[in-house]
Length: 332
Image 1 (cartoon, one colour):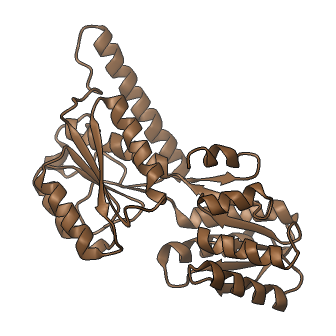
Image 2 (spheres, rainbow, N blue to C red; image 1 turned 90 degrees about the vertical axis):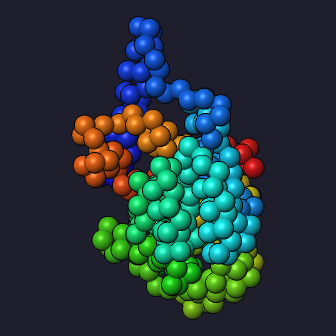
Image 3 (cartoon, rainbow, N blue to C red; image 1 turned 90 degrees about the horizontal axis):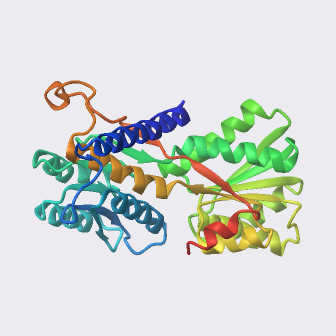
């Protein structure tokens, strides 16, 4: 259902753009064209990590198409107060719109609401602040991503055998990925069984150690799903050291260079690429539509308190294998 929602959104934007172009050809104004002094800002945390690059690239491309400017800001540390400060500074600049990934949903709610009340549209991506007045949230459905990993694992193992999971217990996104994987195996693949779930602690060495223990206790294990990139490299290292490459299939998460190198080497069979570019690209379009009031579900949606945008959008995942890994490596 969420896939259809995304398709519908995309078609809606295409239709709007097409209508606008037709109007322009007839001598009218073209609403999908802003100005160079119209600035939209992306705000993140741990701002220097590779993960955000794809999202901002998508935002930049959308901004270029729309004739506006996109700027990147963020807290360089994993620090709630620092991101709140950065967001407050951005609000003071009165940008045309803000695309923000919230380090903490409660702490970011107040500054997001402050921006909305000042007439600055705000859309969240990747990490939400659901209690705020933000207009929409674009992100990966982690449960669906886990289900995708389960179906890919079934393809690799022939739909049978023992499998395990290396994850980060207690973190919501990883719990959802694990649940999607485990429950899909249970529902759709009766000849497969999840025999072990271990904590990789988000650390390559500790994930490798957890994998070694998993293999020793389950010598017939046919596949392992790692819910994060760091753990995925650790799993790959352990499987290689055990001389079981090709015998134990590995599915990882995200497209860090270390992960992609292992995919190219055939150690990791597949990894799931999140739609970070989509988050940035469509998030930018959402902000532009809000700023220019281009979507009208009712005559006055603000007074009616009717959002012109779907509140939550699954930006999906893509399965990356040896066959298409180069396309992702070229972006590094």
